[in-house]
Every structure is written in C-alpha cells, then in structure tokens.
Image (cartoon, rainbow, N blue to C red; front, side):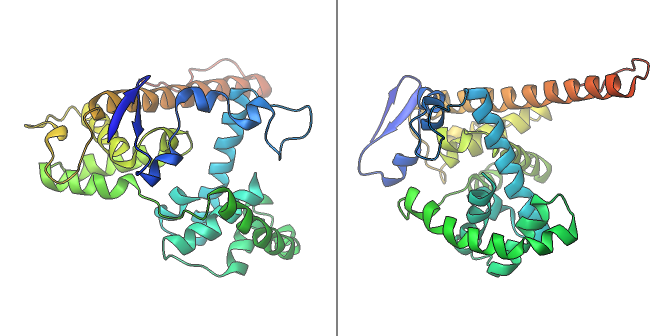
Length: 269
C-alpha cells in the first residue's frame, strides 16, 4: 500500500525496504545536525551544508577505492573514511564482487594517503584493523539488512521495453552514478530514480518517446510515482547546479591564487 504525505511516498509496514527511505525534513534534521549522534563529539553539531560536504567526500573516497580495485559500479553504489572503507568491504560481498580484505585495506590506505605508496604501505595494517572493527558497526547500523536494489536494472528494463537508444540509457546510468553522492538514494526508490534519470537524459538529448514510461508493463510504479519522479529530477538538476557553482568558485580562487589576469571561466549551460 502506498500513500502520499508531504510530497513523499509512505509505504506500509509490510514493506520492509521502506525503513530506509526518509523525508527531506528528516534529512535536514539528521542526528549529526541535531547533535544527537553518539559518534558526534559532545557540543558539536554540523550544519546541513557541512554534513552534505562530508557525505560527498565520503562517497568520493568510496568511488576512488572502488576505482583503485577495478571493481564494479554496483559496489560503489552499495558503500568518515574508515566507515567508507568498511562499506566497500561489505558491498564487495553483497554484490558478489569480492576482493581480499588486505587488498581493500591497501586500496583504502593508498587513497587516504593521496597516492603516496610508501605511506600507504606503512598504514595498511592499521586499515586492516579498522575495516574489521567498522564492518560490524556498519552491519549493526543497517540492521544486517543487505538486500539492496539499484536503479540500473530498472534503467535497462525500461530502455529495452521502450526502445530507448543505448546512449540515452548510458547517460541515465551516469546521472545515477553522479547523484550517488547525494541523499537521492535515501529519498526515492530505485525505480523512481531510474525513471527520473531516463527522463532527465531524454530531455538533455531532446529525444522524445511515443509512450510515457509510467505506462510500463514490466516496471511496477506506484500511483504517486509521477510526482516523485518530478521531485527527483529537480534534485538531480540542483546537484548539477551546485557542482557547476563549485567549479566556477574553484576556478575563480585558482586565478586569484596565481595572480594571473582574469580569464573566462568555464561555461556551463
């Protein structure tokens, strides 16, 4: 059973996956923002912007470790630094793309030391101990629920059903990969994120479909899906706008630091 409350889908208690979806109000008042998180130092709390920044940095760490290990994107999508490393270790098991504990520890140490091989080798044992310690912490916080659904399968199924060109499907997959650094996976179900990513890619490439994706016979969508898909697309757009603003600000600071004459910054449409 699905109902709509405050623009967000609420699912029945029988839907066990629903416990991992939150409202935007929840995301603005997380334990680390409210200062009620046991891992947050006493008297210390984060602003939503600070928490978002740390979340992105943690996700970047996961992606860099996965890239170093040459693992599948599913692993990065299922995975702070020690916790991020433990997420990679667990995700490698969940997605049956397993790597050795020592290999993951070495990759974490390499990424954490920014590619300094000597420093990475010296810290590998410390990372091995940290991963063992944090793995059980992550499992406990996730209630040992490792049944994870990804948007990728829904993108493939919809692309096949509606005859969507491969380059559109690949663009949608890239959109999902990019926005894994945001809370989108905690706000929307994977099928909603998949439809939003496909419509976003279709708009970018100005490609029209003969039928609406909501008419799918193979991907089950709730009655409130159109509203949620629209909200998800706006969140994706907001992510890229913030990324563009960050790039422009970084370019401006770089030019000021060099003391060079002002040049034209990168152009974003």
